[in-house]
Length: 300
Image (cartoon, rainbow, N blue to C red):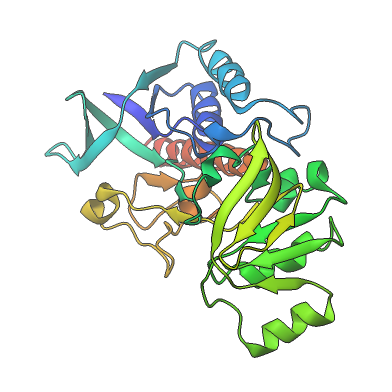
């Protein structure tokens, strides 16, 4: 029997496992190893780890975990979680491995869908990004484009004005902005192009220009895009875990969900940055140890 199973091996999952393992609890971290930031060349704004490659960050994190005999790592994907007769959580992976645990922490992150632009994957993570706080510094003062197909468009536009005064916004043929929002773009000297994008041009992942359906081609040195994030997991519904209107798990600052013994941290509770996810995982680990100590103390 395992004290804690952590699902997801990103910053939130590794931080949770580290704190819980150091709390003398047996931890198994199960990692599907399909991180959302796999295409990213560098991660930023993580103190002492600024500019680190995501793969290197993960490797160093795993190395830290495996220093502790209380922590083990399994590669795989969890398909189901059920309560058994002993009131333990029984987890089954796609490899038909079965784990029984007192507590489960969900830190699975999100899956990302890019805008429907041909060839965009050739530039994403190199000169096209989704988070200004993560990559705005590297793109500062350049002629940029924002490809925005969702309601996030105006919010991201406002943020990007902090890093560049040369910004074009395109909706790739979609109707995203209302009349007042269009007026706000005009007042801030931001050109809006609502035509469909037909081609992105560049070399080795570095964007050089964007061509539209009308034939117009505009030179850009990179940019940002809004993405669609998928956070659907089958066992969330199986267990009756509460989610908010956007579908993210509702958890308090210590990771507690509405189900006793089920915790959540990281992007499954809402989009966040690397350092924020790590912090949430740390706090969730503290929450688990605090709950365990409280339970043990009451039973003496």
